[in-house]
Image (cartoon, rainbow, N blue to C red):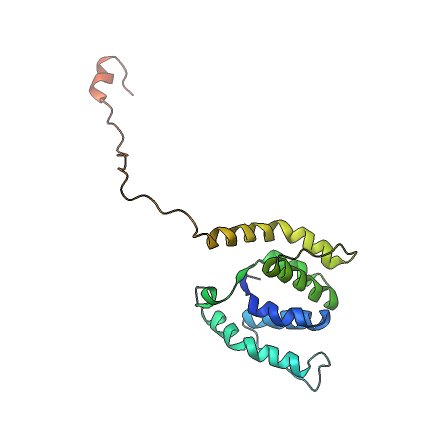
Length: 180
């Protein structure tokens, strides 16, 4: 499991799906980005509706672009909102059932893209979200700092101090009886 960039274009269809479909859709995204062959079989899979298939087709070219870039900048970062989906989140997702996994991804997406905190629930998805929340908050802070322009530029006009260390006078030490 490696981190990948989660774009709002992935979240847009996920939030429209029921939790089981959202789980399946997200698993397909993960499998595709891990280099696995992903196919849709609408005849054999009851969760694959025409909308599901169209949603998949709508993001497939962007998924291919991202996968071919090997995680490096591929231009999608400039066009879409995004955050890093850490292996930690994927591990939490893997522990959840199909319907809870979909709810978990929806919670993360709503929190990161819509600033909506999930309502308290007695589900494992909510518990796992709370465990991941600190890391999500760190990502949010980085996103907000990046929106402000990131790290301040260094002032090119200020004089730089010389960092050359002063030389020791070894002759003076030897005269005083210090031979080290």
